[in-house]
Image (cartoon, rainbow, N blue to C red; front, top):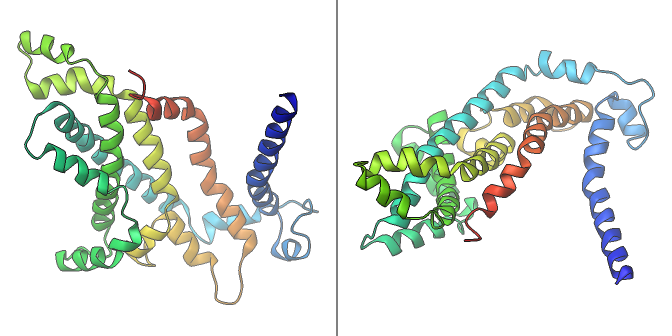
Length: 271
């Protein structure tokens, strides 16, 4: 038994080293000039320099794209929180003839990869006249996130006692008021999960933002790619510094909220 436990710990340790080593190398090489990275990428920096980080905010001008990405995260999260709980409430609490079809419809959205809808999506945005705009990206992010958010809220809402709503109805509380005043505050763990999950995903997204808005997008990862990528030369020193700078906000945020994130994911699993 002890031997199995030791082997299990050894495997976990090796997996941890495997996942942490790229992060360590990124931080290590972010303090080196490009020539030193190409000569000794695994060695400690001989003369640590902050010039790579300075270039991100002077040469690349990364501050504005970071603000744009943050505002996009806020807009998407607010839209999801304003729509997904009400949709989940209707599916769980209201008996509708199309209820089963709607559940399957939203669940199907979890199984469709972005590559399948990529071309039709761009054609639709072109016909709507919003191609390569922030509105198109916001609409895509919200529609892409609704199925999972509805699934998370529905799982938790199934465990909320109906007696709370019945008592509120006896006291004269209408359905809308009952939802926002009584049910929605109980969904706080799920709401925190939605904020963390989609905030991190939208902040780190490159592919979908690049495809929907094009290479001139002013979001942070697309902007970083524009300035730091070259056909013949890779500015690895600036790339590593950019990875560290863009990873710090989401890493700190997730570490501060990870307990609530796990609680929200498991909410509704046990009745």
